[in-house]
Image (spheres, one colour):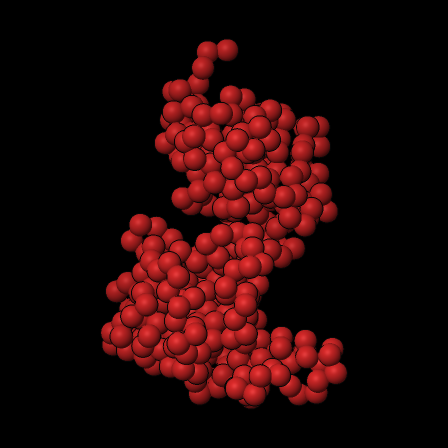
Length: 333
């Protein structure tokens, strides 16, 4: 098969042990993202199979209509809203799903919390400029970091990642406060944590607030400007899930007002994020380039399943097809 691996920014896939699974196939790796329907269509038109790295490329109906050779989309992890499943099915394109792990994103979230609360990045950066124990040359921002013990870790969403994060918080002596569905709150209480009395109390009491929700129609923009305005001036807002969970521009407007006081972010509505974005110009923001799952063990796991699905599909034995109805729309050979 003629296979394209999309958006491998670090050219990491050839270094993976599981890359050997694709031996014998014609593989092209793209290290940058194409912009616009026309560019993407030209780039992807020759390929039989696309291997996607999570949601870095959106495959909508208009684009799929311009890919006459495409037979398979092999997804690393689970399919989200970036693929028009109905359109793919109608065009006889199979979609194969993989597996994921909560470990790397949970650890990245905790690393951001630790780094932001102790101001590690500005301290380290200023040290290279000869500034000893200086968090900022701005006196208003040259303040001390804080420990986590005894403070409140507020987690919205108590799934696999949220549960891991709650365990980290407990190990550090934090009070863990959970908000989300009734099932999430009940599960948190069973695990020895607290359920917030209300959404308002959840935001008001948080010292560190971290989002761990799936993005769908019900959760898009679920965090509002009013929610953020309830947070403490010393609070840290953390988002390693999806930027679209927050109302557009709500965080950009809230941070200069001082509620919340700080943010640690790994996800953005526009990725790769342009250097001119206002969040990158705010000294109270710690930003990383969507590293949640970008880690060697995770890549081996994600890509092993994605590559195996390609191999199995070529052999006619893939049992991980999300849309088996695609067969009804296959064109006669």
